[in-house]
Length: 83
Image (cartoon, rainbow, N blue to C red; front, top):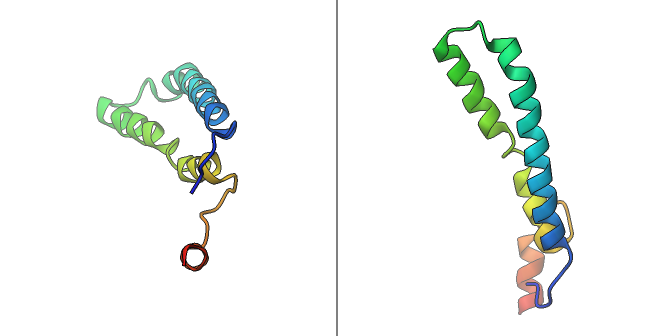
């Protein structure tokens, strides 16, 4: 468990914000010209998928913000250290 403040959290929040803004601008710029002639239902499906796809790397990113590592710590080792 982290007991002191770390630079990763504000940097991570800023990086997440900037990354989402860039992703949103790219989607807003290119998706309409690619799928604009599709039916409304097909466009809805594409936009829902694009709206959720940014969540895929989020778990590892949040782990990095909290621990400084890209993968979750081993739970068994954490329990041994706590005992």
